[in-house]
Image (tube, rainbow, N blue to C red):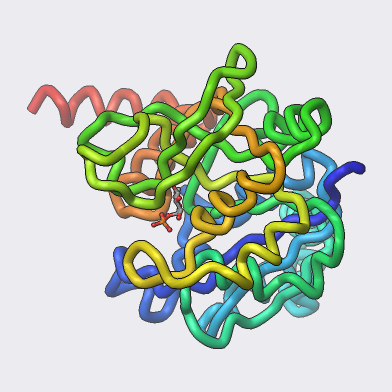
Length: 288
Ligand code: G1P
């Protein structure tokens, strides 16, 4: 069964981005001129996902509005004959069909995913954490989908991280099942460095079977007092095979100011109209 739906949790407060996140949702912050969340939506569309369920909260109007039509702006661009910008705006609106559901209380990532249950229904689905931006030839979620189709089990993305950073992530214990694939034995959310079963950290891409919802109903608040998706997947491992795939690509944590800045610089260096100028300026700054 192919995966055509994705859940994108976008309900958090974004406290790391205060003060700006008081008025601009962190998912709407730009990498140069493109909201962070658009990277996840483009990746989803490239991999054949047609429906996205955004899990939002108060103060996230800007995210929903971004993917909606703006008749005034379209009329303005039409009047100016700015066909290029008009076409780009329409392309973005047409990438996927967007549904939004409100998470009324921020009880954690697991709870956010559970909020989308009715809209997902009884089929496998993808989850994107939009803070994790992956720049790769093959879309990150498509790397997971390939494993899902072959192995017939849920799949999550991992990457090796320095031992000093494991406590920021979900961490896997698994056995090698292929060149970049692991079969999971156990999953721990934000372990202490000395308790981490490996240095393979979960990155925000998942393909999950619908049985995850039964596990999510069952799990109690875990790390940092929140209902964790990781704990529900750890429960799923006891019922079904679950896999992890080491992502290929450049990873950016756009959920922190420095990570967002790095993602922006990397993007600017890929854009021919700014790369030369930026490189020259950076060289000058670094010499000083
Ligand atoms: C979440 C997940 C964690 C994962 C991380 C990846 O944590 O709970 O398992 O490793 O995303 O970005 P958060 O970043 O919300 O604390």
